[in-house]
Length: 91
Image (cartoon, rainbow, N blue to C red; front, side, top):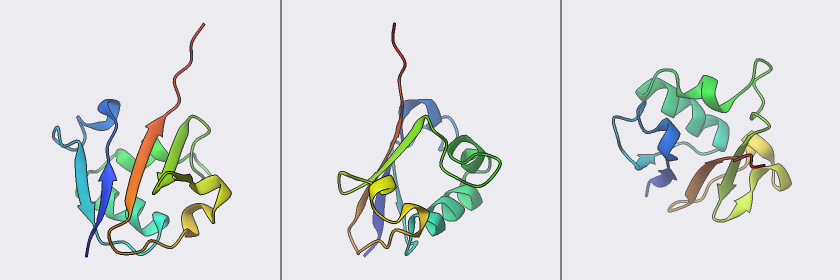
């Protein structure tokens, strides 16, 4: 069973307007690579030059922040829901 990635509005231009995408990756890192293969340029919006998730990007697996799990090595079960949420600054 595939996993579902929720794409935030600012990245939907890269996914041709799709707000959700089905993927088969077994880890968050594999999902990022799969997204990059299908939607070139998306990975650079998610990861910094060192390959780490950017500070202003939050990634959740079934509502749990991957920073408190195993980062990009976080294993994904069938049917997992991945949410990519850019941080919003206010003032």
